[in-house]
Length: 95
Length: 83
Image 1 (tube, rainbow over the protein chains, first blue to last red):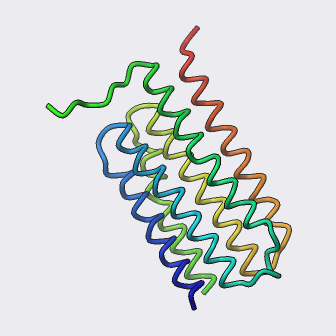
Image 2 (image 1 turned 90 degrees about the horizontal axis):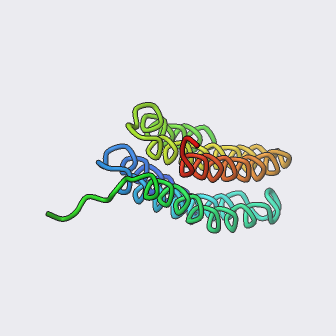
């Protein structure tokens, strides 16, 4: 039951992150929406998968997948943002 | 349950696919591709956990690793420019 709640929260966060990735204006805003939604949503989804299907069905590989997403999500976001900044994309100012 | 979760996951994968389709710059397309990779790896993991195919977990881990590698490589390539 709590596994289903985690799964639903993860799917909702993935949907909201995708919506931000699709609807925001400007590369950095889209990067923020996509990155945050991906990391939080995938972590919640995999925790829900472990809780719903049991430890025996998946082993420790899902924990490894969670750790992998937690490490590499910020890394890829940083690589994309650094590339965009070096190539001359600038964040829009407040004025 | 398995069908509902996978259908919802693929429905959430349509939005990064749209950004990958029509993003104006390379960085938008790259962000969409990274998010799409995450969702495909999650779908593989969900199929493995629901149906009991343990081998698909290894496939999901390898897919996530290769997707991250591709994202970083394309970002570095685009950063360096045309020279």
